[in-house]
Length: 226
Ligand code: SF4
Image (cartoon, rainbow, N blue to C red):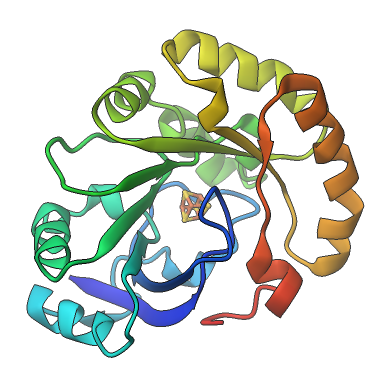
């Protein structure tokens, strides 16, 4: 597998925010979201080739039970089930972070952290906007993910206007537990995070969805590998 980076930090987002975790970032993502904060991992070749056992050994250099497999987009990787199997054999708690654009069954991951992309993620470059629009939402895959895994769904929001789109997606997917839905501010810097957090907090109060922290921005201003 092509590994973009492996590092030890705190989970910054979702219900496990604050939990020390080892991050395994796989290279490659087809979506090209306009506000993506890991553009350096878009290319399939953006990293070094590791065998599964080399990945597990690298993860084990830190005495940490929590592992986050992220990207890029991990769910497009054919070797992902084997990686998950071997991390589980090594006794790890595994979160997979995915945009929810595809489904793989029967993985022993502990938390499927799904981040479906709203239209606010569509790139302004028309050359890539149409392929992004065509693939950013896969309702069947979202249904399969929530029906087969322990999950959380996090939406990146820009403004109140995103709420209508979120409700429509949740309605179309169906069977989503609202207690597992989180909203998080679209932000790349501490200043943006501070400016948008009160807006998102109000949206959470109105809907009952939880607010997702983004500790990697607050603590390290999104510095890579922190
Ligand atoms: S799906 Fe995630 S990794 Fe891929 S472009 Fe969008 S934000 Fe970036």
